[in-house]
Length: 386
Image 1: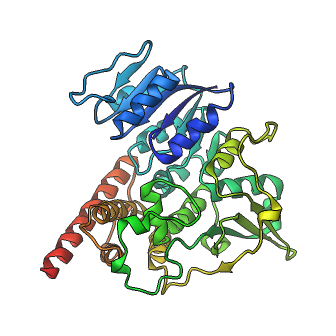
Image 2: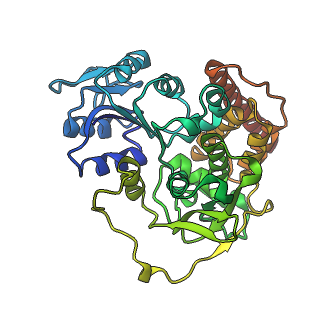
């Protein structure tokens, strides 16, 4: 299968490429990166794709001049990338980039029969209502979730009849500050990036430290599977061994267990028939000593509940919240916003009236408005500290 990897230079993009490279079934024909030119240059040399896309110029060059690799076309216009992805040379696309930069690309591909593996949760969260007005995402057989929890639910829904399930549980590790008793504003970016169980990209790791990411994953499951808010719950599972659970109507609970390793998730997403061996480290039951559970109480995980609030309000709030989160993350990483103050800024943003978008173009506008709103509140908070 000829596939494209959007966001190939991020952590998940690298995991996807590492998994695909183990099998001759896949030919990587397109790669996209953001600012990591050296990594994109290395990937282009290794996989020799037909197309490499970078909105910030071409890999390894300060001037933006195109390096020469045989049979590789470089582009920095997303329209050119979209034309290629929609053409006959591409059979499947991995969405591994964070944010909404490929939202319109995703929309265009939905109208095709190409296989779409999606981990770009902001796309589904911000525009989930828009997408579901046409053909519900749950009814699109070419769409496969790549988040570990959603992939786990996707697997379990294939084994268990929907009418047998009473409730769905997504699991959360609780992040690095589950037992933190100090001032949240003492937490540095380096501390927030030290996740106890998972290796992930920087944005998702910082969001996970506040459990904001888990709140967004509830919204993602709501839109992806068409589940009601009363059907979805989150439980803290400290070891990150259980990725999802379903409570059956007869009282039994079914769970899917595996090591916290995205390669196994990717492997199942591309080979759901389980007809291939797992070349990666598998899960050994003898390693399982204890399992700890808890609930994300509001006092400890305000970010989680703000994300849920955005989802339950619906309309433009999910896109607005995602945009505000992006600005807060960038400001925190640049030491312009304290870790605890991220929550205050998001709360201030959520106090605004947000009108519902009518199309994906409106969604992008609302997302940018959320970014700008957070920036304004960050500046106000900075001024008040002076």
